[in-house]
Structure formats: C-alpha cells, structure tokens
Length: 253
Image (cartoon, rainbow, N blue to C red; front, side, top):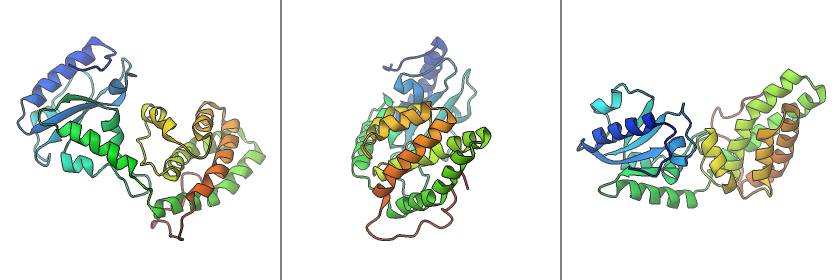
C-alpha cells in the first residue's frame, strides 16, 4: 500500500480502512499520508495524518470525515486549488502546507492531482521570497527583545531564564526561515528537524539552532543572542516597510 513505516499493526489496519473509504468516494481525487508516519519517525502513540484532495469544496460532510476510529486520524480535505494557495504564506506566523506534500507519501492518485501538488510545492518553495513586512516585523521584534534577553542573562534568575529561552525559540525559528526566504514549516518537531538543513544563512545556522534545542536554558539564551546578532543583517529590507498592524510584541516583552 505504501512505503510508510507503521509503528504498530493497528496503524496499518486503520489506514487501510480509511483509504478504502476514500477511494470509494467519487469526490476524492487524491490521498497523501503526511506527518511522522510519512517521515518514518512514527511511534506507537502517533496519530494518522491524511491529506485529501477533493474535486469540490469540502463543505460536504462525507461519512469518512467524522467516523470514529480505533486511533486518532486527522483527515484534512481541500481542493487542489485550496491546497496550492497554502504553499506561499504572506503573513507573520502563517505556515506552508507545501512541506506536507514535499515530505508526504502518495496513497491514491488516479489522475495525478497529488503528484501535481507535490511538484507545485517544490516550485513555489524554490521561488518563494519572504514579504518585506514579515522581515520588518522580525527586525523590530528583536530590536525590542534583545535588550530584555541580555538583562535576563545578567540577573541569572533560573525561572526567568528558562521562560525566556523557551518562548523565544519559536520566534527564532520563524526568523531564520524568514531570513532565508523560506516559507514557514509547521512547528512540529519532525518537520523542523527534517528541514533545518534548508537553512543556508547565516553560516552555521543549522548547527547553532540544533545546539539551542539541546542546551540548558542559560546556554540556550546565550546561543540565541549569538544567532540573532548574525541573522539581523539578513532581515534588512531594501526599503523601510512598516510591520503588519498589531505585529509588534512577540512572546516575551
């Protein structure tokens, strides 16, 4: 059925049942397995992530969308055009579904709809340029937050340090992808780990980000400051563009 690695026999059985139901629906044009099972990192407690390409806007409540299963199944139906419109996010924090197609395993593709979306995701990601307002948002964010990070390090309070290091990791990840003109991936661990090597700048960013994720809070905060100092020049826009309305703030003020 698929080259996916199933962590338990139940995962295979449930997916086979779901796929049979989807193939029998004339509105279904294609099916893709995504998530940890598609990446080969599934665990016994993993759910099934199944993306469905439909011919019509998936407002219709098909039985397979709400049927109870022996384990969690996340079924996401959209038309091909709706999926394609999610490959080039243009707002702060928006994520690209293109990674799910780039990393996914086709399960049912009689008319080539899934293959077409996989090709489109690769093309759109390759030509993606982070909108200037998004880069401006992150430049302003770090100008606001870095002095606070430095003050936290000087005070040395372990709770405050742990909090700052934790909440700023998300912002740093988003900043790196923006600076590299890459659309945001979803912030699940598997997707981020798989695509950390996509980061080409600043030099050593991938290794430094991995070090941040492994480090104790005080060391993580220090490494974050080093990485921010290196990435800020990459956010400089050719023209001054104000950040999106309400974009200032971030997770740590």
